[in-house]
Amino acid sequence: MFKGVDFMKNITVIGGGVLGSQIAFQTSYSGKKCTVYVMDDKCKMELITKLDALKDNYIMAIKDMADKKDWCRGISDYDTFDKDKCLEMVQKGYDNIVIETDLSKAVSKADLVIESITEDFNVKRNFYEKLSKLLPEKTIVVTNSSTMLPSKLCKYTGRENMFLALHFANSIWKNNVVEVMKHSKTDDKYFKMVMEFGKEINMIPLPIEKEKSGYLLNSMLIPFLFSSLDLLVNGISDVESIDKAWKYGTGAPEGPFEILDKVGLVTAYNIVEMYVKIPSFLAPYNFRGISKMLKVYIDKGKTGKSSGEGFYKYCD
Image (cartoon, rainbow, N blue to C red; front, side, top):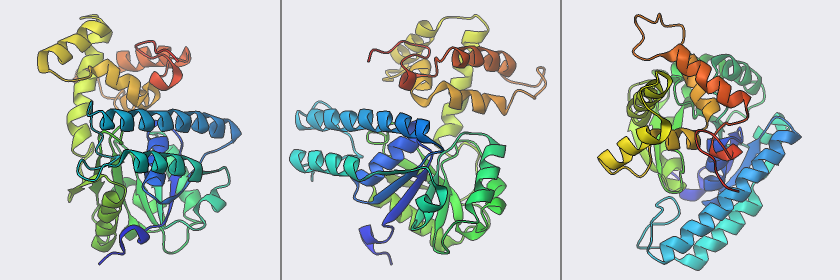
């Protein structure tokens, strides 16, 4: 049915944030031609810094895999692992990523466009309205939005039947699941194509046949993070104690605030902002208090691990 790795050659990622940069690196590592669109030269330099760090993460992970310390399924299957080949793929993938600040050039040859910009409906709507005028006829468009349903965005794309959601987990070289969610007007042909693309970049594609805000993973993760932030903002306990309660009580490798620092506090803030208008007597969490707290961190430049500090401080 499909042409394997030749099926989707040219991939454009929109946005060079935490997940956008990871998606681009994994896509290029897997042998695709990958272009990343960012707004300006400042964003370009920030993306280069993220790609440099990702290259180091992949190299470190491959060395750990060779020493059998850990395994990253997005890098290689256990049975086919070849350290030297993987290291070569990392360098080639890094070298081949193209960064573009001209949107028309970025999407001119795209077989697939992966949108990974801020979780703000108006920003996404305005972007899609601009994008729709520039896309080749062949291009499939997917959103990596964590919270917005594709049916709410599809009419702005100019290709409702070729639009769906493709949602990646953070640290995708390790956590190599990708959720593929259609809406009522998505042509099943394109749903299957995107599922196949997930396999081609060494992800485990999880089909979601019916729209659900939060997909599978975030339907479980977001309430968990809200509960943790609620404990903090209401003065129930402190960051480290809440993290320890989760890690030592369940055996999980990371606590909620370590996860939030990886996801990024700007992303967390944008998600919380979607709930602040709920009357306090109906809201299950103190969304207004959480929003104000996160804004203080963000205004101080403490936006998470990528900035060097969030709820925790990180060494260079």
